[in-house]
View 1 (cartoon, rainbow, N blue to C red):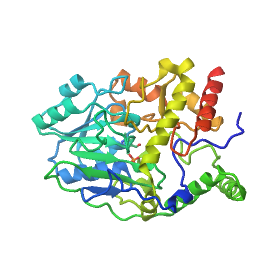
View 2: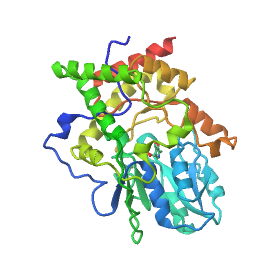
View 3: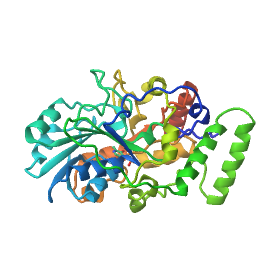
View 4: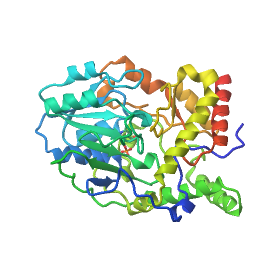
Length: 385
Ligand SMILES: Cc1ncc(COP(=O)(O)O)c(C=O)c1O
């Protein structure tokens, strides 16, 4: 059952959309309180730098993370400590409160997979103790909370990694919400050939999914690329277990500005369509998976306003399953597989359960209801074995 084109976890570059007339003004990332960077990690690095905190300052992060957030804070000169995330991915406020000390200067709250955290109590704690609150929306671009507020607008800072929601060879952003807080410094200008290469590759991958001659030409060019690099079509370009490599992707550098190519890629994105299509795909997959996997959904329902990054599901032997899905040409999103070494030193059961057991199935805006059937069939197929 590998007759279909690879279904990627994240969108590819759609040249047609890029040159189309539609130009919605972005509700979150426009205006003079926003600065763009090469990545979310670069945004976080620059936030921490701009706070000019004294030596020994601590930033609290969730124990379920991908590691680069931790690394950004360490590289910006602060210490870190971790608070517990419940298995429903909400913040364990009791545990977090116990972790606050006189040295705690900041807290990072993550809206996992696009689903909003309840922040009102945390905001009060932060105000009372004069702690900076950063809303990490790396998974949650264009998601809203129950009151219809965009995620990333309620804490002191909103942090974004746009490249996960729309195709960009690199791209993150910081939004400063609190009056009196300054915009962090600009990143350093940066360009390398991998930025151009990944853009061209993505555009070709997108063309192969469409009917017509261009699809054949694109496929031939991609085959040549895969032949010369030795990288298979369904694999990502990333070496699998190399944590150092993971922290040090040049194109997403901690000090770097966003590339001009990324700015061009982002300019034509009709954000309303992104939200609608992701929600439709999520709902279609929910229906297809509910009879057999309903008890394994990470979130019991798709609340109004949520723009899902993927469809997260609890599974056993996640890494093995992810490999089998990839072999079936459906590439899942795996988050937090390699927690930061500082966390690994502490023995905490929940993050292992979260980091090792959640798989994110693709629902992005370039996929259709038909693709959702393929995703569901692939999951049923790999679960049979
Ligand atoms: C929750 C979270 N925050 C921040 C980041 C950093 O974003 P970027 O990869 O753009 O540096 C990531 C990256 O995967 C993430 O998953």
